[in-house]
Amino acid sequence: MKSSVWRTCLCVIGMISFVFAAGLVYGEDYTGTWIRQKIFTQGAEVASKPATLSLTADSFKSFTERCNVSGRLQVSGNNMTMITKNTTCPNHVPETVTKFTYEVSNGGQKMTLRIVHAGIEVKEVYRRKE
Image 1 (cartoon, helix red, strand yellow):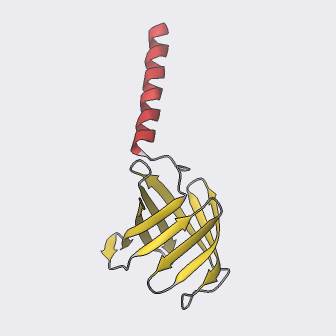
Image 2 (cartoon, one colour):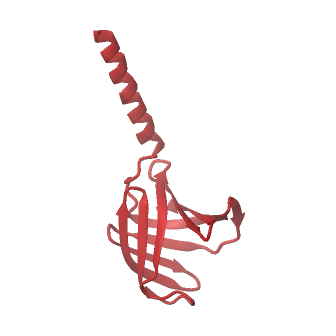
Image 3 (cartoon, rainbow, N blue to C red):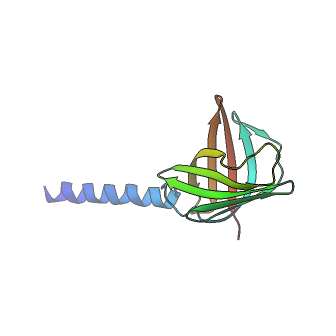
């Protein structure tokens, strides 16, 4: 009986270690500055311009060569909600609410944001700015 308990503990510790090593735990530190690497629509990569996304525990700022957006950030589990307060982007107005699911992986160096709008999935892949 003692050996089965020991094996179970080792198995659980191994699984937890794998999950943390793979960086697949939601709630991993999403704060900081991120550089967009790629955008995918329905799984196909689309052309994109560089973008910088800065996140704190309760705010966000997004910068592109064309315009800027900032506002409040709410995070719960793997859900990230951005509520626009200020924008210089055409066709984007204050109080716009954008809801993503997010995942931080690769030891905290990669973040993926996903949104489905009108049945179309858009995925943005970021790397942490060094």
